[in-house]
Length: 229
Image (cartoon, helix red, strand yellow):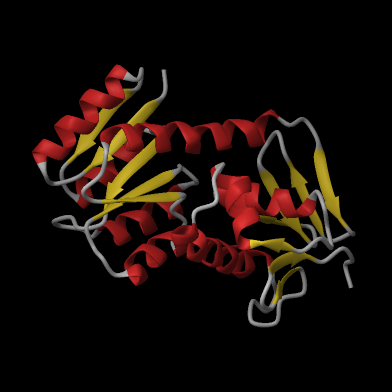
């Protein structure tokens, strides 16, 4: 049984999400503030975390930073904040998806399943993908190396890079990349791809401001260079 940690300081939201997730077959852990969330994640090792951005004691963004320092557990953010910059900040910290309040509990369950399917789908492919002599992606282990150095990617970042690595040199639009990692292209989510690309570049490029591997094609989207030059 998969375990989901729900982190929110509103008891009614926690109750509703717990009810829907348990009915969907998940084991549910809960935390009402940021410090409890980090402690629960370290102790229980959930398969996924649903994380509110506005929390007492430790802000949701700080919780996301702590979770990312500890590992690559998938994170879905819950936010009542209307500013796009808040959502993008969460995505840049490594969150896999976000849901804005008020939300449909069924939609949250669907998002949980979709994120976990992405993790499983990446792990189920039994191959190693190489791009030139620089980038290597060990799909079963979800491990990435660049120029022989290990790189830690989240599940979404790994899938995004893998999708481009399977067709190096091809230009992908943001909508195509969204469809690859989310299963649906939604215009309002296209900024999320930019956040994930920024994260990947920070991890795989010697100079993220002058990327050698993950290149921008202005007015179109992104491509992974097909040479190691």
